[in-house]
Image 1: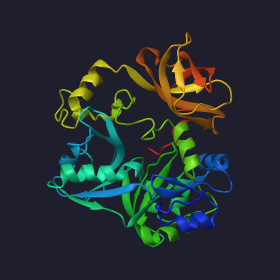
Image 2 (image 1 turned 30 degrees about the vertical axis):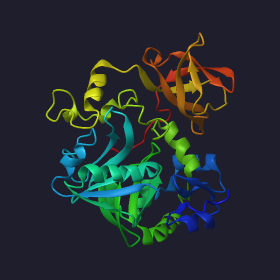
Image 3 (image 1 turned 90 degrees about the vertical axis):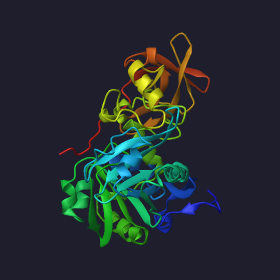
Length: 373
């Protein structure tokens, strides 16, 4: 694929090329979609051993100051004030209607709140933060840092050879550590459903660390193609597909993101954009719901495919779909009318003009293997 003259490059661009990656433009960056082994082998390797992902295109931001947590709570439905040092939380930026502007990770690193936001949304997210929080806390845009993800059942063994103390971390916890001589901030989290770590590393030391990790016999480089199939099998949403400004956390089946202190009748009820609409829908229920959908046969069903009742009435749409290498069959998620959202409901999906039998299933197709201690 021809490179865009305007596309940005991560600090690992040259290494991706050296490793034979197929590079594509994604969210304004030239990124590896796959390596010579191919997407299915990369996917399987991550499920069986450890895969290394370059996610340096994501946005990294620090919010600093005694009012940072209270300030951020005015933009998200999560409990940020309750985040203890070293704790991480998944949350959402919402608009005044309760629609989702982006999803993000927030970690209390002890001296600041460390945010990771999606690459495609990071400019608007940073503008959003500056507009609403600049008078309440200091904001640092970490443009001099890269981000790596090491994912898979042997990721902990690999990390132990670099910083044994990190294996004390449990899922959704973070700590500072020195890896290969680089001062890093590491969280035990990821986007595959596997145990793993995300590593914020100085950009100028990223390639050396990546090479050191890849030198371990269990580690292989993994591209965006396998990253997508891994997250889909794990039932994890992709912003711009499964989540957008036309969806809210209730219909997205993310009610748990509305932390208990922010719910109706609790200590810090609401207080985020779209809270009134969100709390009402939380109490009353939504007209549609994100569900897992299992098509019959071997053909993957892609985003945009219509979901029908057995009588042929359109009741929803696929938002993510593909082939699940671990489960050995197509997997998909999408939104359907709530009255058809119960697990076991028989449906049909329109695939290139043909009606394919399908069934509503739990959205998690592969059991999560996060390390909870």
